[in-house]
Structures are given as C-alpha cells and as structure tokens.
Image (cartoon, rainbow, N blue to C red; front, side, top):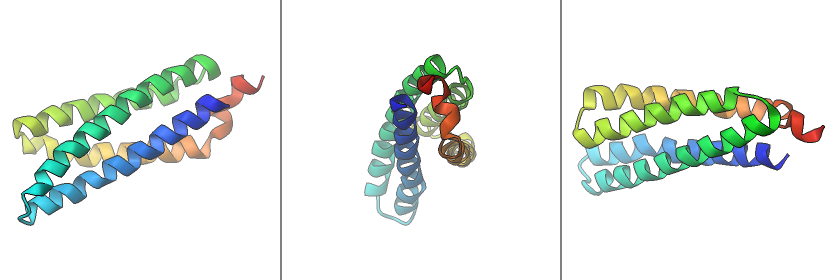
Length: 126
C-alpha cells in the first residue's frame, strides 16, 4: 500500500512542478529576465522528481506486477530529458511543443494513477 501512495505523491509533486514551467517561461517572455533563472531551476526540479518517479514506478511494477505506471513514467522522463537538453541548447522548435506534450502526458498519468488505486496496490494487499 505504501508504494502506491509514494507513486501518487511523486506524480502529484511532478504535476505541480511541471505546471510552473510555462508560468516561469511566460514571466521571462514578458520581460522579467529572472523568469529564465526560475524556468531553469524549475527544469531541474521537474527532472529530479521525474527520476525519483521512475524508481517508484519500478517498485510499483515489482510489487503489484503492473507495468503501465513504469512504462508511462519512462516515456515521460525520456521526453522531459530530451526537452531539458533542447531548452539548454536553445532549440525552441523542439522545446516548446515537447513541453506541451509532456505536460499533457503527465496530467493524464496523474489522473490514471489517482483513478486506479486498487491496481497500484493489488499485489500488496494479497
């Protein structure tokens, strides 16, 4: 049961962190250059939470024999990593659309994780 709640907590923190990213980018684009520093710091937080989420998803997979949280997390973290380096390189043609897709994907994962609590904990309760 604990692993399911850890996964939910990490996905929730991940969503909160990633939703700040377009706000920080908007602050920068509106002329406040500190927004770029906030956006970069936010990227570090989002990426770090994503990597922790991969670990939690592996534990969920091992304990509950449910691979979907791991597979979804892995796809998102790979996309976030590509987006991170695209942003650092200034490749906005990739950074912006991948950012939108990553946010949408993470919100969908958030909904799935919170809607299916039994599937995250099935093997733990047995």
